[in-house]
Image 1 (cartoon, rainbow, N blue to C red):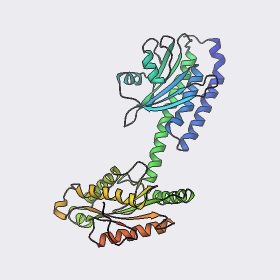
Image 2: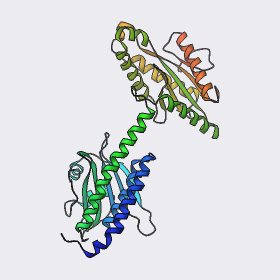
Image 3: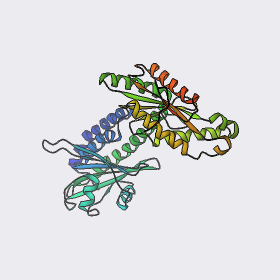
Image 4: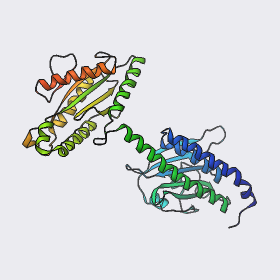
Length: 355
């Protein structure tokens, strides 16, 4: 297909736009920006290069495909960016199979176009150009742009679109690698809980927030009961599996805003933002009961695996990281001395008993 004179004039400016876009994207990746924030300048660039009205990316995730759509600004309206989950479907699979840029004129309905790109126009007046997002041989998703149906689609535009898609695949891979590295730097490799460094930073942050807004928060220190006896009989590898199971049980009983952190070998700490001591005690009791009911492999030989917990609250039990940890540790010590498998509140003479 021959290049148009109009297309030849577009080349230098569009190449500059592509290069500047991915310089911006590289900066966003290193700041840990969200995937929708990273994809927004890419989709805006696609619209500009292809003279499109909207663009979208469908990204493969463990929980299911995620769509990020970008609708170009019109008049006084600002660009609209949306992120949502899509159900796996034959259409999504078909789009991801399009390796090179493919113009799907007449191959898609108005309803499908609206679902993919968020546009309201008729498919009869619009065309969809798509290509799969890949890194080497790995399929990462697909990228598409909606353009007027009668628009000329020359080699230059399609070449720039192919360049954009290729660079977007690299950027997407880099973003995921950066996210994985960041996650590994603040999480415990065995349990997936946050590590000690994150715990201390999070406590300092929560103290600052609570002091600024005259709020409260609580912490739970959790220690696994009977693990030494279990390790002596079954070995430390099986003991590590117990610790991993305890972390999963505790995580399942927490809110999304709560933070489960690894404190020591068999100790965890939970940070519960904006939570009273009583509220933390109820949360701890749910965790204690769940661990007590869990059938750990081999515990019939060594005795039940349970958990003891100590609770402290800001500002009642301390205004510094050190004070809060010390008082939750003292409460935990009381729970261990009084028979284990108990929840103990800092400053109390008796273990917590739910009403």
